[in-house]
Length: 400
Ligand code: NAP
Ligand code: MG
Image (cartoon, protein in one colour):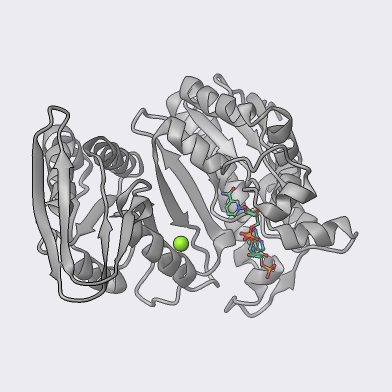
């Protein structure tokens, strides 16, 4: 069988620990035998980030801007313990943070639905994709403890010296205050990424804030989304038969709980932090959740939503058997290959990626899965596979 040809390389960002091991197996067993794989390889493993003073992370993000599509393995974000473990020169920043700062994107997380792993919410039949605005608000706040009586004010000094001020509260006793900000530019690029992704995936887009209470702050988010929708996307949405739907955040939460799924839910930073944990837990497992960074510049970076699965890696190093779920990492590859196929007009490449996804889902639905899924499945005949066995079972299905 002739291998499927590619035109433009994928930006390949290798990573750490157990997911680095999955990465190699997935390439060797599921991709290289079928695709004449073209990638530009960047080793984002912590050792190489340390050796290159993290330049490799910056280079990989710039390559993504150049080529348009990247696939990323999970990576360690160093903390004090990692400083010792890897003898680091510095506590390097989170690669995802560095990449996101360069690509300026929004992360979309989507659960992979399989029969036998039932969402806790009975009405959910299709995935709900959560998009979290990743800049500002409470995450970049300034807080103050108020020791006793006095007046708290909010003050803005313009470049020309003009001062605007407002009273926050006249304290009669101790309390707390908090100042938050966001920028129009960041909100615009968040909105652009959301509309773009809705068009790409042909799904409705929901957005919600608390604009009835926050008449300037949240209302600005609402207005920017509405403006971009009307000026740039309304026609395209109509043509595709999809909808942009704005509501209040509490109404959105209520609707999500009785919805069937199959839409994108755009959330402000804090709402997205909280709701993404709720949605991903209710869908089953982090190992069944994919993640794509969509930049308003029109570039895409695919990865798994989980981390490097450190505990399994240490077991692996001790020579013990592991049963690590590779589904989200497989789907990071298929997401990237599909997008590359679409951009380069290579339908065979996109079709291959879809077949690999189907083979993966079929493997689980026929009862062959890793340990953590076996513990939660409703399927009757379950075979627990180790890390390699699962990938080989997918290969067998794929070949069929
Ligand atoms: P994690 O790697 O997501 O793993 C947490 C636990 O979830 C695992 O110990 C395992 O539970 C379960 N799990 C996660 N993925 C699984 C899979 N594919 N198959 C089976 N079980 C899975 O999170 P962490 O242990 O908190 O973080 C480890 C490292 O990953 C950290 O250094 C962190 O910086 C990094 N991280 C990277 C990213 C990223 O690159 N996007 C994201 C998050 C974390 P059991 O041990 O109970 O089996
Ligand atoms: Mg959180």
